[in-house]
Length: 458
Image (cartoon, rainbow, N blue to C red; front, side, top):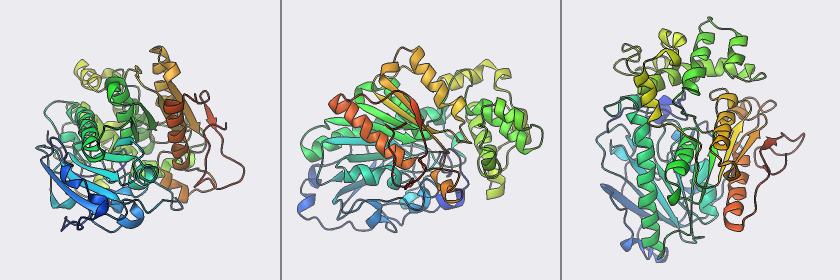
């Protein structure tokens, strides 16, 4: 499995930032009482692993150290996000065997990197995630790791096996780069469950899968295809892949055409983009639409325009973010059957085997909710798995919470709703407390939307 460089969320503007990682590992902290079982704790199948006994596993303490990468987290959360601290435990960093080498974190130049965190005060559970977009293993430390660690969960995250704007070059067949994401997530989950058993003396009582954007897709896929490994999941605006093309390969060409002046607002609405999201279009035109369309189209349909992206998605930020002229005219329905077969290899079905909560903002301007969460909810119902699924639409939420800082009067961060949804899921799984039916989580007229949200209150 081969791959290339580095891009956040689905495909974000922070390419240059993602190229910088934490410093290379030095000597780990000396063992003390809370590292008593580290000698028996090893990651099955890892080609390399390094342990560190740390006084605090959260970003409150790890920011600026080699144990996290705050640059790769940029844009995912609002500035006022509150994070916990004071969670001592063991951190294990390493990688599984892989032939691609674009994840430069720690100077390893090796993909399939992971981080596993084992808090001293364990609640018996494990939370697994993958990197959103094409970021790396530390990208959701603030968004996910900090809070679940503070709640007592063990935590494991993977870079998904390929990173960066050139991720589409990994593998030999169309669809290979995304297929690897699923395989790497399964690999890490199985390994992390065994690590937990070694460290604490028994396997996790509960294992939850969760993630943002591409990792939201991973959550759906894992609960459809590997339900025996998990007890439930929370999907935060997961990407939808369907063999019929519903999703970004059918909505983004219209967005690219709009940016080039060959489509109008009515075309955008017809493609699924929400009315009221127009103020977000200029930013997404400059930072998301072009790059996302060309690299994901290249991953599944490399024969469409071999000269774009060509050797790479671009060598400068401007080149990376610019769309190819041909992408404005891309029509998935007109492409050869081989393209649909490539997408079908990673497609979702809706046949989840464990409880799943989906969250998406109604102003998502990268993955319009009309072409994503709404469609996936219908797929789950059509598969007769509706009782296992809930979809909560966050009013004024968009794809990246960082945009709230620019538009605090128009947007609402999804993170506090996500945290509440995770608690709702655990009560559903562990106590049998069924959550309410699908509904819109309305933005309150007053209050702290950065730190509070109740998904059970419409």
